[in-house]
Image: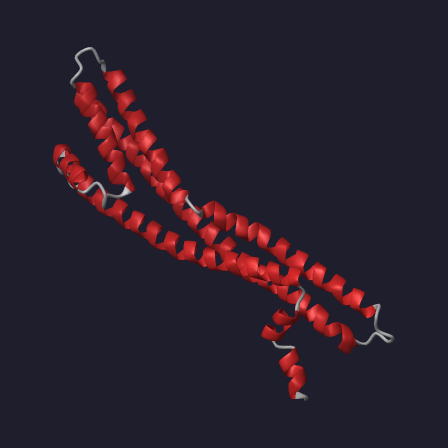
Length: 227
């Protein structure tokens, strides 16, 4: 086999010999892939930390610890607290504030406490879901961007054949190979992004259910205290 043919058909050679449009497409897909992996690692560690902190706080909460002590601990470590601990802190703070008002009845206190926890819950879930939309966009758009580069490259290959007296496989193969690199790059960017999005979306949903259950249980505890 001729070594020069192998060199001409290498990935680097195909990319360097591609048209400007195809090279731009490949660059965009490469950047999308790099940012995807950055957010994948970022989100993986963030969700693992959120899960561990939730488990740790639940152990403390259900161990019979005093609510005021837990509240003070949450205030002192607010930056390092987990989502569930911040939900608890927001609810207990609102509960203590409303309880001091003599005109507030039981229903008003529990409703106000629930709204405070729900507001914090929404902020925490939004934070956990951050950057997931980017992964979803990369996963859904990248194959089509790669396909666009492929179609453009094939069009250029066939246009080049108009200047050739005899069309052969050797003449058209390099151009088609250059074009197919864009499709491969699109799949390379899309597949990890889609898999990571589905995985992380499931993790966020499980955490949301866990937080929601805690809000309901904590609301029942507070309601019993004011009855």
